[in-house]
Amino acid sequence: MFKYTDKKVVIIGAGITGLSCVDFFLTKGVNPILMDTRLLPPMIKKIPKYVKCYFGGFDINNLLKADLIVVSPGISIYNPELQEAAKKGIDIVGDIELFCRELNAPIIAITGSNGKSTVATLIKEMAKAAGYKVVLGGNIGVPALSLLKKPLQQLYILELSSFQLETTISLKANIATVLNISEDHLNRYPLGINQYRAAKIRIYQKAMICVINQDDKSTFPVFKQNQKYISFGIHHGDYYLFNKDGKVWIKSIHYNQNFNTDEMNIIGKHNHINAISALALAEALKLPYGSNLSTLSSFIGLKHRFQLICEHKEIRWINDSKATNVNSTLSALCSIMPLQGTLWLLLGGDSKGADFSLLINSIINRKIKVFCFGQDGNKIAALCPENSTFTETMQEAIKQIAFLVRPHDTVLLSPACASFDQFRNFEHRGNTFIKLVKQIINY
Image (cartoon, rainbow, N blue to C red; front, side, top):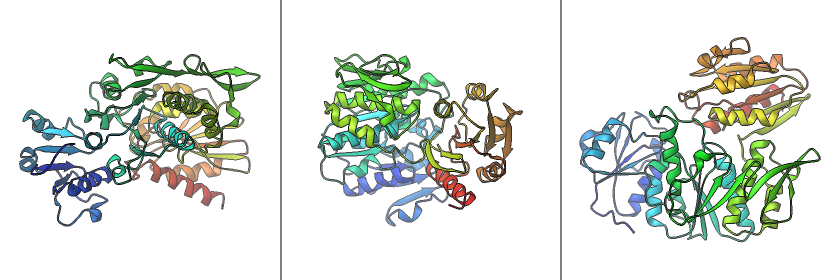
């Protein structure tokens, strides 16, 4: 276990992760310095009065005198001041690194461009049903360091972002997976998708068992350390999908029992893939197959992930606010086809430098009308002007759509963009959508 006594610690970022780091060091008897580029961080009132703070930028003198710098995921390690600190040999880590230094218990580590939260929650529920004492944290709303406050568990499940993996070297996952890789966060990765991929596959570096996506070679490990592999895929793998009598079934090479996906509450092809990836993780953990299938049947999904808000006057309203990249929105479109009426698609926010050409090609020549909003809404609308309408806000777009929808139509919020231009986070955006829909239909 690392000792931090007499260390000068600087924490960058005063959000939920940064404050969990402040709390962690205070319990270690270290009073850290807290910095944030924002003048008034939203959680400023939760910062203990005796913690020294610098807001509106970095205090370079204190930064370069630090023994340890802890960077929140929202802050790029390629920031010039942090690069200067790195050149001086100052240790720069994230909260996951601190967590891994403290914990001596089994870890399942999950990353990927899409589906992380659903799969992480599914495997947590499967483990819980099998009798495990298990907790879930990381990039899913509960900071990893907050898990250390609970009694020691039998199993820790971590959902990890590429940003968290960049600053982690001590992770030794019992089971690790990269679910998929598609363009995302390219505004943080100037060298492109290969740089993004390199951050993601760090998750495998010291893992005992790697669960791999047979359909996505970019997710394959590059580390060969006597690791065991379990796979999933649409047509091939330890767990895969097949069609029979117009139904989609799940098959395992380890068991004779097949599973009809119609028994699941969560719908769509992307959720079928989430299901087989969770089953592959459960196989690595040696959980009972029958219990895993029961969990699949009872799982109702997570808010803001292809969430059916209501069906009113034969019009469906779906909240997929968690779709913060192009590939996630493409998955939603695949799951909603074929259409009976018109699809009213809400796109927009901060596109993070993504290429929208694939998405636009999926929209053209279909019964899809697009409303684009937010920071990059105008730019997205310009790619498909004959099908698109631009509004400044999502609220204005929904008001216009409300007058245009007809029976058998579907309204889908699947923005393909980050939310921070107009909302606190994707949850705030999704909850705003839900509230507006309920007002429209007088729920």
